[in-house]
Length: 505
Image (cartoon, rainbow, N blue to C red; front, side, top):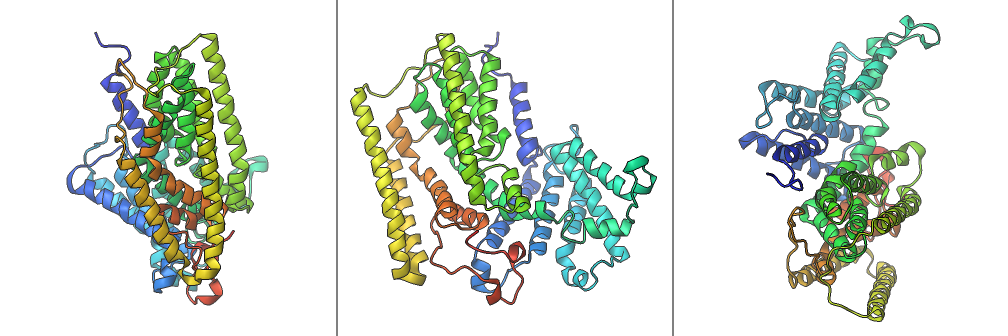
């Protein structure tokens, strides 16, 4: 008989399918199509990093206007949507049907139409020709189908209803009736300008969301997610209801680099839920604790959900303010979750998991904690005032000096981590679970924290724009504060982000 703690193969497949269908697409083609899919995704990522960086202004080419960048962004997204997401549940997952190849190419062309015919469209604003209308109609249909594949029918149905309402307004009853718009007017507004499909929402995705999601995904694939889970368990796993408390903290730490609730839940939940059940939590309570803490990860700065970036554009407030106002509610929510878990553990008289840390007097623990805290504060002060002193002295050479310094720090952290055993992915269903020791676990992954520190520093201290901060967070090695901010008056070519390419918000 199968052990009840062991998930069935069908359940594991369903879990993987759910994650893939929401984040990366449920289709995993083999051979050349699979390599092409990965290559296009990589090219898309490089393109986003390119337009977010100051490199186009330095080398003098590859500068795209906001409309052109959004058009290319949408073309990549539509192509990958038809390639990675199957049309139906019964559609093949290990290959791309010929029909999807054709739809992907057609959708990509419609998405890139504004970029390809940018000059022609600029010469006839508000006067679409037959070709424009045909491309716009096909593009909207392709976008609705891509939305259905990636997010399901509800959002697609809502969008289709409002499009129909725009066209058939004169035939609506009572107060719902309106003058309506012609097909040409609808296409001109929705597909040929910057107020419909290519409006603020797509601009936010192009400028901010993609880079922050890529930042978190790269860190997670590098092992940061597993590192945060291990650190949380090494610190809290031995307390009453320790696995549940560790699940809350691990989800909060994973939320630092992930704005996706589903990805956060799966990353931490596959390990924490069985551990919570082992110490006495019911399956329902274990799932509730994990989901609650993972959903709250969306409001944990610096990498939050897409809604935070939409607030930046729609409300017109700096992203730094969003971070500052989100941090306290996020912290309070996690403290409340830990307190609720503690009460549940007390009521059920739960025990923690056996700790691997050597026994130490409480006074020594307090002294060690305070020493580490004081060292961290001293290092932060030294870096802050040190950079403030270097900038006027070094001038234009500041970014190069800071780059070398960060490279040295990163290599040093790698050397420190190499002195400790590498973290492994544990089996949460194993009979014996041994918590990792705190010091080796923390020290082995300090290099994962450096990109997050760089991102937060660029946003909160240097006050770079979110896109540029994410770019330097990706590259880690350069704050780029010494390089003068590009000014649109100094460049004859169009500016990305609608002429708002700037370092400071």
